[in-house]
Image 1 (cartoon, rainbow, N blue to C red):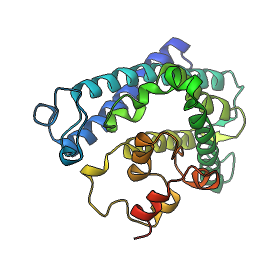
Image 2 (cartoon, one colour):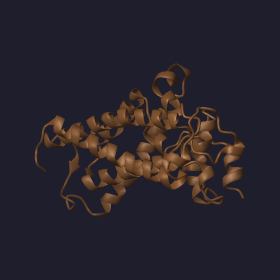
Image 3 (spheres, rainbow, N blue to C red):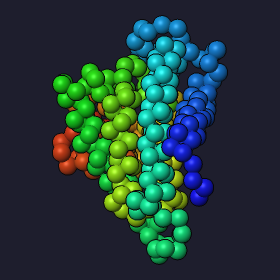
Length: 256
């Protein structure tokens, strides 16, 4: 790997992260709602149940994009810090795929995902505490109808604390760069999927055995309506174990 300055990595990662966001969130939005000129509404009135097939207000989308751009800056700085630390030889990242057995790629990925889900669950609950919510997490919940654009719309303090997970884990667990990329792809895709919106999906989409163990648009949609439920990122494990799983979710999306 060619050594570059921290600033170079910061700008490069910012461009990559922002492009990834616009491609995935924008592309998914176009698939779900059609073109912006035909699918968006121009006010902030709550969407009634009878009109929930309308696209979300442009003001909400614009606000989510603004927060996501700020979050992209934070994530880019974190990525630049990781690469710079790797070049200094102080992380446990490795580039030789044969430095560990090949099966370790999958194992290390699974360990990182489970740890990240645990980190996110307790962090997410903490952010919903009345003393922190307004400053740390309210931005993500301002949109009355979350969309793929909401997937990375975080207040700066939340973005910073979320980014600390990957910054920290590369100092603790040996991870190949392929594994880190796989984790980042999983984070991005899962965040977009969780904010798809049920009204735009097939009726039977959430009703699958996977819904019992993994989060998804049905699971996360309940969180955006009831802040005291469904804090998980990838899995429903902690919600079930700690009483933050909605019985309604099981009845409507699993036990059918």
